[in-house]
Image (cartoon, rainbow, N blue to C red):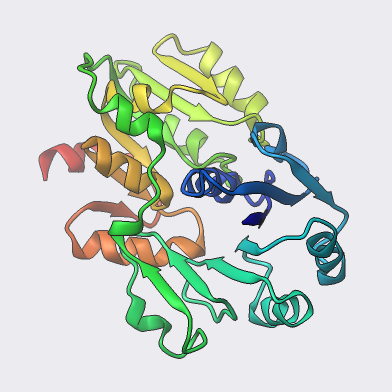
Length: 287
């Protein structure tokens, strides 16, 4: 098939959609993959190892024209600004197979729906998708990058006390708030991307504290996580990777769309915070 993945990244959107789409793309080794993205500020289009069609807008007519021009068989939507009406219009105008990625239980007009979160409950989609829609929900469909699978088989020494990853772009600057509460006695590893709008402030802070390393656009996140005693992360896709690597963690909510994962993690007894506070690490180790 000719498969088109419609997704975006930016300083505000983050990079999570693109990153999981790249993992999903590997599930189609015998098909032709391309992406359709808007050229938004702070995007990671240059990290996509497939052809990328640049869209001027999120207008459906532009996408329909591209689908016809490229003879697309299936479109994968991973975008919060594309709804069921948009999907239905695409379907009516092109007859493509539509797969929708969803993690907030929204209504979709699609042939396949993928919610790869460990918290996913397919029963909640009963009234949200067409009756013919194939539901792929839960941990058995979780998208784990190959680098984590390879890394887990390697024996590593723990050289960091704390690993911090507050999303690819950290739009609310949660990393700086966390750092302000952590002791200089801790060995700290921070990972972020060049799309982080607070990068200058973060670099300045790190340059003044010799106990911290900062990795930007790192190709060794799995290794850094593996070498850490505790991870401080968002309750997002990163949870799957941290659980896979069996690293203890504290999840800190930074966006409304993380609520479902927050509830799941709380029910399972994991450490979850609605907001970071100075005593979080002490409570974690004394729990």
